Length: 437
Ligand code: UDX
Image (cartoon, rainbow, N blue to C red):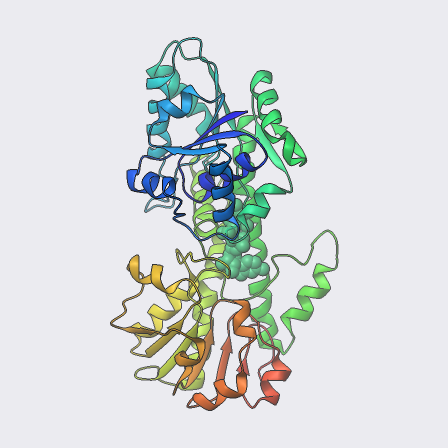
């Protein structure tokens, strides 16, 4: 099929590459000419395992190309996917100005007799599809189109496999013609397809991400009780997770959830529920527990070191989770900045995130020493704080780590290390929701 993706960010670019990989012809549109130029020159603006090869292979096979023109994309495609940003506003509600602009741009170039399916892939509040349809109609009375909601559930760091093998594909549609075309788009993926009305599909995305956030806050609240009672949250999570109705996934206690989706989507769902007159107050507690999690962790560090001012502290990890270079809304970055604010001398190492953390102004390199290796970060440190569970941190030579540190104190914010091993190596070890040694 001929497909157009409007917006070549994480969701748009990975979706475009994966659609091309299964044999569709895809035009990716972006209004940022520099991005289009880079993509045309074979440069991938984001780090995502497997993406670069996928893009190169499909460009070479002439199934994938990049342009800055919506008209070009629209003229050559039956189905148009909108994958532009929907950032949060100060009050937590979603900024829909990019979506609205794209709707107007589509209206401006849709020609009579050109039936198109306009698919919203960006995460949007319920009822956005109705507004997109109204907008296109308002700006182009003769437009022939249907609006479909097709939320994307990919995770950063495993976006390609998630897209190639989705748990489910949700198609929110009120038109059989559009539904049939969408089924054709997804047929090669051989995934379960759920067809719903447009509003339900939009709600599914916010409800799913809020539920996963709730699971994380739930286990973090249990971790606090474990700490107070001497129980071990890992064992508790295993025990409750063996119940198939609950499941072990997303029951990892730690510093809380971050990233560009969960914090934003929980806030958005709270705002949507309030706007609809049905406040979802449970989610306010989910947020509160998440914020508290980092404060509880810093309290623990302060309890051990007493005053943080002038203390040399090493932090491992800056990204919001492993296998990504994304540092947006990263709890690790908040941690570093809160330590700096208390006057600590922080050395930090991250395998992929340091450059972007500086480039995006999230870390001040004049105040934080960014090192090239994990070992360099711990030199003379009075404590090592693990903030992101990159696998390479588990494989360090800890006798060397101990030797280089001033005091062998480890605060494992993601329960990555084995407490017994750390104890045997001579570290004083603090985990989240597990007894300290
Ligand atoms: C998430 C959703 O998983 C995905 O379906 C949606 O499309 C976008 O949002 P992503 O933001 O890439 O994906 O990250 P994810 O792997 O879900 O992790 C989110 C955050 O939760 C991370 O900060 C992670 O460290 C944290 N987390 C996750 C926990 O603290 N504990 C867990 O058990 C799982």
